Length: 223
Ligand code: DX5
Ligand code: ZN
Image (cartoon, rainbow, N blue to C red; front, side, top):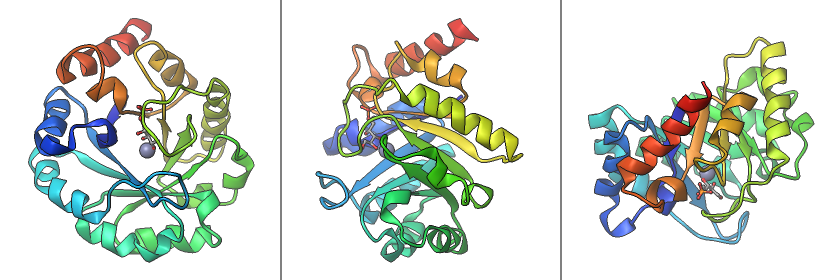
């Protein structure tokens, strides 16, 4: 299992050090939540923050996993690619020409991911699956960290796992939203490869290192 701490829940006044704590504790990716106040009811960060975190990513080997919760994402792909993104994920609901946008991400030199809101059917991904490197299941309504996991997401993960396996796809399956030590086993056993965790890592009961360890322990107990 790859752990992708969402920097949205980190302390922005000491962002680099806070994210470094998670990477030092063994997290492999950094998940960057980009929100525009239109596609979702919140405004967060842009390419400048990706660029600012690039030295840390380079030094640690962490993968920069950018989740665009914005309208017209095609307008900003080159900015995020140049800023140092490794993976750029777009929402099916925000892309009229999803295939073109996925091609654009790849032409910009990044891995391409697609994601869907909790109420969007997995069938919307059927045609694009052969072209993507990652599929992200949103297990909360996008917009904020710290929300509760939507229980029906687990069945959605199982369905997507089956779809990817049936297609012989190597795309990674990622889950995002409300994952804690109490339910991480459930999502991993349902078939995800990558787990995003924001509040559980940066706002959990212990230090960041202890919180990362608690997530790993919960998976180990099951494995
Ligand atoms: C929600 C974001 C998530 C969120 C995860 O819109 O895409 O990445 O920050 O945070 P937690 O783990 O706190 O639900
Ligand atoms: Zn996210």
